[in-house]
Length: 253
Image 1 (spheres, one colour):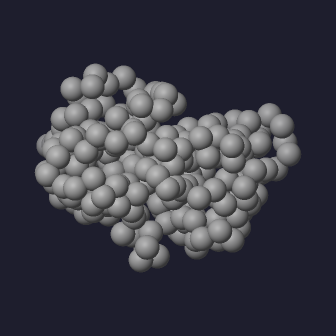
Image 2 (cartoon, rainbow, N blue to C red):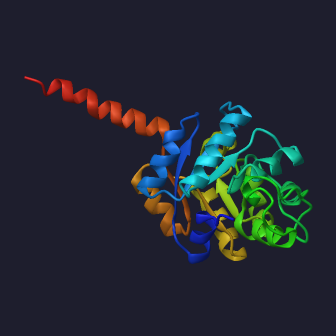
Image 3 (cartoon, rainbow, N blue to C red):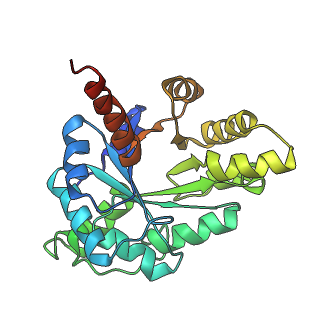
């Protein structure tokens, strides 16, 4: 069964090189892996995919040995662990503002004794039922991960309790939604929120991270202790490439 590059980086104290995919572009999986990324954040919160789309992208991720951290469009328990059965290396859950919600998610996606996930042992993740149940459960609890997004002031206030939740592997700061809400309440700056999350994760030995563009932001969050750094997406790559290539027309004599 495949080992998670994200978790390997976390355990080694290294940066998780992460990019984003929000559309059905199988070739993106290949090229991200080829260029040395560890993880693709597959966004299904704001983008629509069919189950066949998802299955193919996850199959490609196993073929080319790159993690897919899938942000699902549901909190339904069987819906969550079905994505793991289809081959996702981890799940990224938006809007986790309380330790109670974090614990509910652990219950859904971790096997006993950590959680209460239902077992199948016949999906892509289990290599279609060639391993014993005990080996599969041990692998799944150690090689798939749960990332929770802090995107509200309440989530920042509860960052210590969320980070302390057994079974939460990574805390993800969502600067878009969090920045929007903090701008309306004025109770703290986004930088102050990052500092609170960083301190909570350091206290409880949990990895953290989030979107980090441009390079200065990547360095700033790395210096703060963040491991999961997101620095690219298909939109960013397309826009950058198109902008660069359109300029070549101006160079023609």
